Length: 311
Image 1 (cartoon, rainbow, N blue to C red):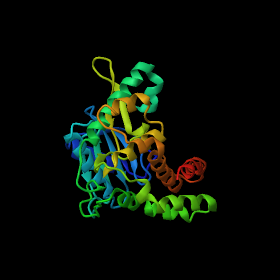
Image 2: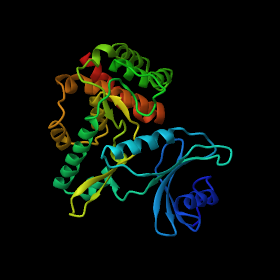
Image 3: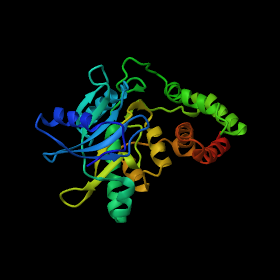
């Protein structure tokens, strides 16, 4: 099959397959998948029937792949479903492409499952997702930090770390002509008050930090029960778990069935629904304006107005 949707050559892909499956292996088929902004994501089919997913960045040193490989291995070690890492390479003179090769996991994303499942089946998926997220959040640390970045800063105070994560993004958006001046001033007032607005009495908890529909693969198990088969694209941090929940609620990843099941093991403080959830939903929308532009200005404005009434 000809492949024309990327500048990654068939020769390069065949070499990666042979390093994975052995010198006699051949590459039978390549299919593009939805990937990130700085790399190409492909499904590779080898001649022996094996399949894998390849994230590859052409002619660029992309150390994000090392971090993602570390985090995928960590999730698997903790008993959470995640693709097995088959190989990872950072560009050098001999191989100028960075890539991450992972096992191919059968399944459909959560949005597709919503269309395929009945209400009871979808509730079961949500309950299983809550079980997995609860298990993830059960792992704690003494400081707030990015997982896998031991050389970077660690923070004792959660608002300091949260501001550290979003400060560069907010400063870029603050200069954007897409954002009305009044909206910028409202966001700036919230940003200045994070120490008070995000105060809580919990500890740093391990989070995936990007759980939304496309990063959740589900499928029926051997008994026909729909279950979560894999959590994809981790961006793990030791953070306040409520920030993860608010993100999942913002993008309609979870339903009341999830929240009921999650609360069996983790308490949500009184301030979560009243205030903190809305603060936590403000910043991912700032990031989406930063990444994707004008389409997210209206949703951002709606959340800012909601927050302004509360603070």
